[in-house]
Image (tube, rainbow, N blue to C red; front, side):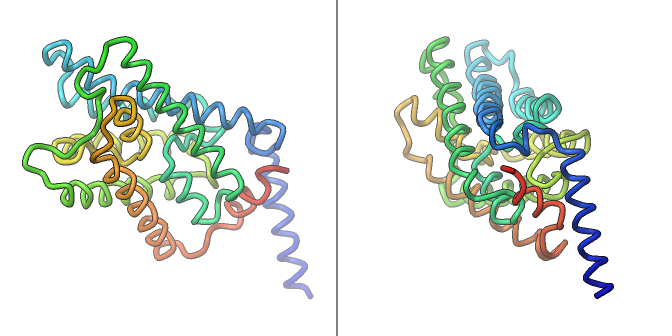
Length: 261
């Protein structure tokens, strides 16, 4: 009885701390539209920067170098986590949203809304780039590099996304990417992955970042690589998280269960 009472006390304390520290935008059903908007807006910014760097680099005759182009989305994600990660969690990526849900830190009934918002934001970004600059540099689409097979690109995307989602799960608060640790680690990983792997696969790690420009430019021949690869990588990362840390934390699970109270 004493052990049960102690467990109830701990659960009540965790619940109290969760509601005391988490912003209303992440906990109240009435504010779900804000979370959806934050995912659409954040993904728009990510795709505009990631694809736009390639487009501008092509138009400017190399004024935007490969190094600049691969570091830019990492810095953009870092900024997004800082300025609105507390609102919607700054997932910005269907593979990340799925990983949080499979891990047990994000409710499945919120997954479709997040993923739809991400695709809307990404497609809007690609439409913006096409309207501004035309169908230049494949609208910044990610494709296997010269001499790289589709299988090789797929394996690299699986590997890169496993590392990315492992970084996210290891630094997130429940299902939210927030704070300096998460912003620096995630933004830094995206930049690092791009610096060595962009010539191989484009270092997408994000189905929306790749599918959106492919859809708008009218060529989805290699889009499957950047959907299948990140999803498989995300699931592997969830498995690794179980090996490293066991079951989801009580606070993380309660954040998922209490997300729409």
